[in-house]
Length: 402
Image 1 (cartoon, rainbow, N blue to C red):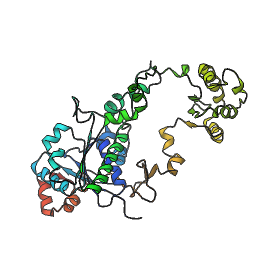
Image 2 (tube, rainbow, N blue to C red; image 1 turned 90 degrees about the vertical axis):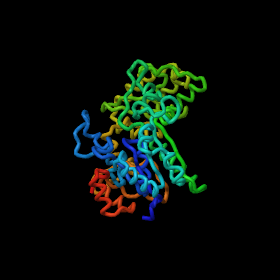
Image 3 (cartoon, rainbow, N blue to C red; image 1 turned 45 degrees about the vertical axis):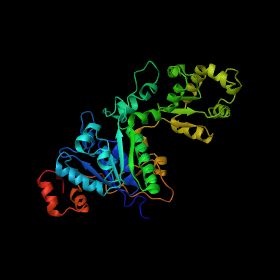
Image 4 (cartoon, rainbow, N blue to C red; image 1 turned 120 degrees about the horizontal axis):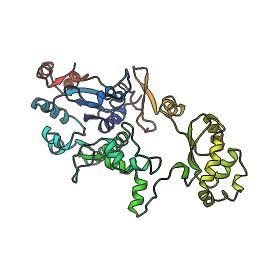
């Protein structure tokens, strides 16, 4: 393996939960040295997410091992002057500082961009917020469920139909796409630093990321286009872009991409004469008679199990895919083939890879997320602290861990 792409890049992950730390994880995947800073006590709340009421019992800290893999763990009390001094030394040696600490708290802790920018002009300061850093809601707290999913219109738009209640998100559903936005901002700033020698502040927020994800409908509205409320499946205007229940009680998504695929679909489902039916002969006729055609296809798809339909429609070159389940995707051959799942070293388990690759560039092997303060001593020694200095910091409650 050649030297990792980001070897020597020093990153401070002074963030919590998912979006900002996950951006640091992607940097770590490519070899950056990431120090995860947690407060004394329970640390990052994401560390205990899997134990919260309503969570299924698990012997593995599954959210933590994914979102904080390949990092070194340091427990540090930033509220104490001695803790701030430690952070200052770490920042002076760092390339990137990542935080999602609420804006008012950044001022109290002395970790605002302006607290570092003049002293460390090459530093890239990456800021993640819920609703941005301007306007009346600047600094307002939020999670991806509120700022990304609900506020952006996605929660309203993806419900089965306009009469259904808004659709709930799953944990971290908007955090990880937002992490990629923050990662992109950081790498853009690194490119600028290569050209100018200067770092700077980059910002991303959950609300803007959610709006980007909902861009098709929001941009339409900006252009004056108003989409009608989503009808229930039974009243759909398209039978060839719809979901169907198959014989083994699974669902699959059919999405024809062109007019020429309609005869191919009719042939594949054993009804080659269907395109000659005046009700379905043209795209407009199929739109008008969508419900009738959907009922015909409902009966056809109910005659075979999912595996058979996948073989038939894939062979016909039609755009068709199963409505997957979590139980399936963890062993999906295609996910394994593309490296979306990869081994988590020393655990016998797999983890989810960051969602892109560079040809000819290897990612570092994935290793488990750090234990609470697991690397406190080694991080501080690397920053120039002596063993006696570290012992004094530990005795004073400024740091914790081995």
